[in-house]
Image (tube, rainbow, N blue to C red; front, top):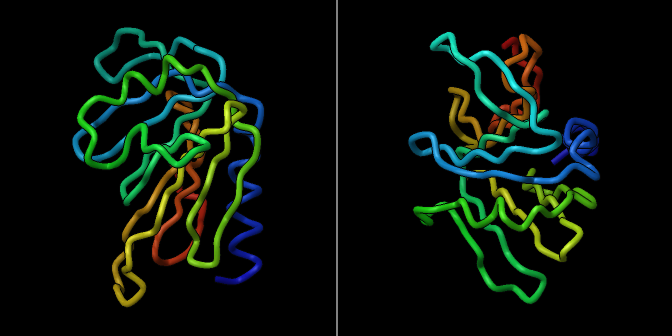
Length: 152
């Protein structure tokens, strides 16, 4: 992976540093994590909903581990609600040579997102996306084609 891609990923996730992760769940086969302050936004159905300032949607392999290595949750878990009860804050982020993202939390836990082995694919295969729910702002998308801003 190029240094430019690693720098772009770290820059994209920088707004998450010091933000709490307060809720997690599933939308089909996509794991979602809510970060930051709780804000009220319009839902697609016309009502209101409470969301985080930021959300990360993960479409590839991922693992949430304690500092000792115990797996709290991963892509095979059915209930992610216990992760939100931790109210842990993002302390730092790292990117490995394959483009894998790790968010480290102030309680010693880490969320590791691993890219699927799809380098030979010509169609875009999304690994994860960072965005501000309910706002018409661009999304940061990490995929087999690199990292890019996508229109909302």
